[in-house]
Length: 58
Image 1 (tube, one colour):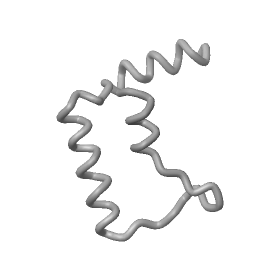
Image 2 (cartoon, rainbow, N blue to C red):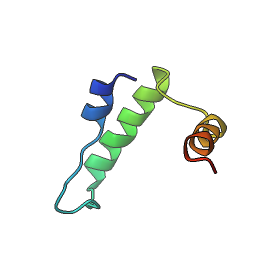
Image 3 (cartoon, rainbow, N blue to C red):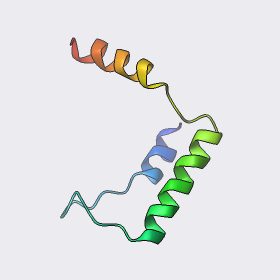
Image 4 (cartoon, helix red, strand yellow):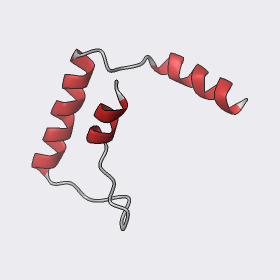
């Protein structure tokens, strides 16, 4: 995943980091997630855990 794609994928409300979503927003995010998975923009959880352990020495 390119950095531009990641930035476009993330949306952050700096006033309230946890914002409620309506059903339409939730379904849109789920569809985006499915599309990213279909394009190979996924990482195995075990691989990610190992990277985090290595990075943070845990």
